[in-house]
Image 1: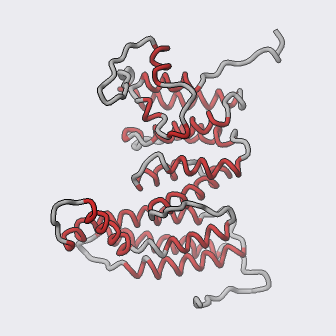
Image 2 (image 1 turned 90 degrees about the horizontal axis):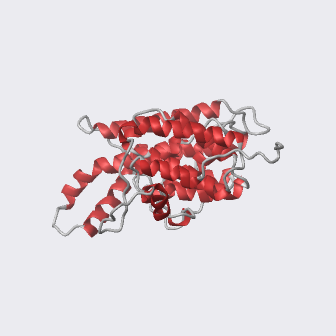
Image 3 (image 1 turned 45 degrees about the horizontal axis):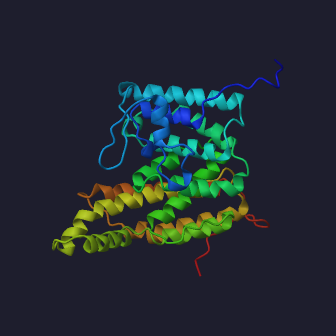
Length: 334
């Protein structure tokens, strides 16, 4: 048999799903997004496994866990094997299957037991998958929107952003774009449309910083609670109860801002945006925080503001002045 006729076997997406379902993960958890559903169904997998599963009244089918005590080890080995398969057959999976695999990995990473261990094997697999996405510029925004739908909690969304490896060009691109998408989502923007150019993205980010005041986020949370609740809780009680949540949301948003503003090389035209970001951060967030010895969460947010400004100032110092200038001086906002 000639080399051209030899076709190395790699597991199909159905094979991968079968293994993970056999570990106790439900089909709906693996593929939660309606527009990224595989061509097979849960019934197809269960029939292949030749397992008779009684369906609960709520319509969900759950496979009995077989390797639940070895969840972390098994998932790491799966990631290593898939990375090897993609290395020997880069075009073994279709474009849609690559996106589905990426979303599957990211969804699995939200498992609580996996958040306490390093997921280097997951990240190495993600690098291979990202490298094999054709027409990257057009598909990357849709992929970011899909990732942002994997969870509704801001803590999990930040985890997903930071899990994506940042030591490759595509990894850094998707982290920046995904951060902007998540920021828009957390600020409850109706139309999530992220511009493609860096200048427009930075302008977009400056506008978002204006909405990140802890006091504004707190007012929104109180208004939402008042609309939802039936009992008559006082506004003062809700303010004290929801303030830590508002500051935690601010803390997460600031981390996302740091991700969205990162760049490998700070060019001269980036300097003006970094200066504007520093100004907006101090004016809208830092000045809104009143520290209190009994409210340490305020101090943590203010500390992150200071570290973020320091990072941006360092980036400015390491860059070159604008063309034709020996020094850049601070200019007041108009």
